[in-house]
Length: 113
Image: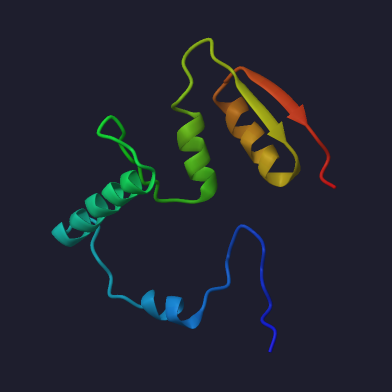
């Protein structure tokens, strides 16, 4: 049997074992259990990228757009500019974020095939 595959930015198709694992009881974001898991996850991210103690991992609780906005609104120093190579809807969304924060921009726009 062929299973339909969805290749888009969400929602995503997941296997039954993954779906069952999501049925875990709720954990309060202010509980010690959550804090331990959060720190553990941050440490695992650093290990995954072989990062040393000069790095800090930031976990963004939100959509991909919120993660993009978090990064774009915080990494540029005055006088720096961003090169945006864009096409399609997500490129437009990045352009909107960059424009809202008034980040100097070199915009290379291409049509979506």
